[in-house]
Length: 230
Image (cartoon, rainbow, N blue to C red; front, side, top):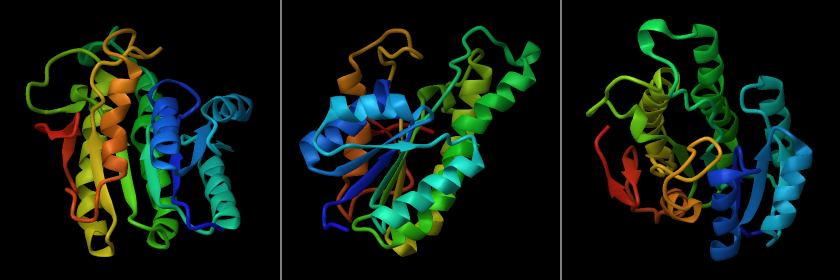
């Protein structure tokens, strides 16, 4: 084990997750675990990130994979300092709530809500052993109740639920010194987002929340380090 802080970023083999992992490793000197469903893709991303990044097989929608991943983290590192719940799927702009494919919605919820919930549960004991423990749930303005409208039904509602999970866990973990926040990276030019601002810009707000000081905010919803409405 080392005194260097340890961060796990889920869905980190590409897009925002990969850039968050890169910034945490390069700019903040953390040991970063690159969570990826496909271990080969995780190894490729970790090699590209460098700075000691390590690949970790993790499918957040598979409880057996979650259990195995956190068993591995405990055995190798003995603790966890930062959990970034980034893995997300199916930005379903083609669906409408009144005519949605519920099987597809359930698959989205499995990754976008129950995945972060499972990793949060599994990470709890390791975060309590960590230094300045942080949980960041990568959310979306599509899940904000303020100004909500039609479209992206499965994705948007799953992110609304993720925000509720943030509020609940932040309140419950605050006495243990664990800071929990939701972050919207904005519309970012990823494979899923399909356009928008550079990935580096979207990732900065996530990294900001991951390295907040002990007196930083908890239980909030942020974009670019500024509070936004739920």
